[in-house]
Length: 116
Image 1: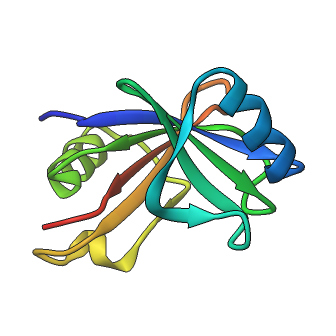
Image 2: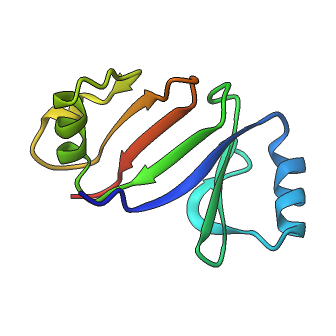
């Protein structure tokens, strides 16, 4: 099971200031993935992606974008992993779905499948 691409989802206080900072580091907004008005957007520099999210969650999150999140979900559930949340679509056969868990130190990990 491949976890796919990954990114850091950062909980920011001021998305405009954060955008300006990360642009100085060479990151650029990816078109079609959020906006300042929506208070979230995805930035990319080469193979690296960072999501900026204002007022959406309190902690930073590691985000994976697998092509088959359902298989990962079932595997982790069978191994006794507990989940912080799961979308209702995680139990359907197709379509986007997501679920989140936390490591022993409380760091959140999100599996977010956008397609299939």
